[in-house]
Length: 408
Image (tube, rainbow, N blue to C red):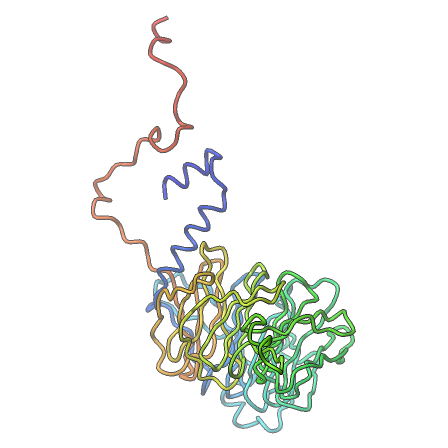
């Protein structure tokens, strides 16, 4: 650590190298934080989490009970043991059961996806099995707009980088991908190509018009929403080898339902998860399967599965719900690093906080668990060891003078 700091001060190292090294160390040492609890509000399983990207302080959760809860993750009490309190909720537990059929603002069925508006904490979105997508004003907790669909809504996503459009991609029981325009308040157009329901959608973090969609028809498609024939690629797990020998050239990404999508932070690769218990890494430009072997990735979910990736590490990691645990893999080599154990039932979603390298997970047990980096343990001789001579740290500290100069 001292060597990194000294080299950075001397201008001999990239300033980001120290940050990458420490970020990587923190991810590799993630453990269940026994001193930090998240207040339990949901009466049943939690399907989705999202941390706002502006301050990385507030977190949303959406549950099978139709409730949406907003938490403050900051420890304002400064006590070592504390609980992250719920700031507010849409459909409190009591209100939910009394008024779930009549209250206009409460989702009537399970909330499948929540997402903050990427540029402002004054707005967030939610979608539900009640066939609606709602745009919420955070200050009033009132819906500013509501989009209604013919089928169950499984997933939605807003681009984090878009400056020339305000489209929300929505995956429903209908095989057509819906694109809703926040500016006009209506569905602008649809994307046709899938044969069954759309279980996951994700905008590219690199190109604002590129969208990835995953379906129960075993296919993953990449779209350019500006084009008339919008489909750019249908990902093929065999990279075209099997279709050459087959009379029917049907490209499938998995041998089962595909219910999870996640781009890497640079947008150059796409991770997918299917009910065939496989996770695959794709080149998002060419559509090629990189053939990274992650082994068996247990996936029992019949709905969308929310997983996430690290940020600023070397190598980068992916955090995947794996039965009642969260598995951590290296993205580009496929190595299983560790399994985070603490939930009592299946985990359905996890979200990464990049500022502090913390991970939050939730599932059918109704708990939200915080995984934080363990404190660096002092070496046995730390108390007696003196600081190293700065001359030994870096050649830049060497002086050019000699003792002969003093004699003159």
